[in-house]
Length: 166
Image (cartoon, rainbow, N blue to C red; front, side):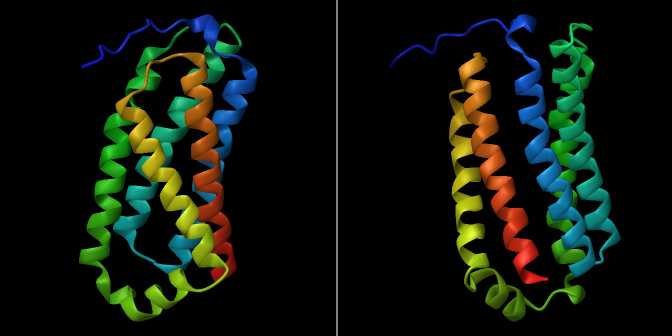
């Protein structure tokens, strides 16, 4: 078994370009959550989406502060996992608690229709890619760039797919 090479995080690795790139998937996710909140008016879903957005924006702010040399505010980065987990847990839970807002046959028809279905499929493939990359993440600048580009593609595709439905 190959031993994974760990590399310590280095503040100088984060540039303004990377921080700006990190903003794009969070903005796409925000747009998607606005569209979904209109289509699925669940308070629990909106709270979950808000938690996930706090996670994303805290990570973005952390990278921006390092990029402009204002220091490593690690507590901002540390908000990501708990808020992301809490957010997605609440969003998934809302699908069961507030299922009265959902027509599963209508939802499946919308999600699998063309062209939105293609965008959703690319988004799902991107999310699977993100999970795979996270298992082998080495904290290098290249790993951050790869993750952000895949995340931007995935979130952008989800957002476009949703926009095509409304």
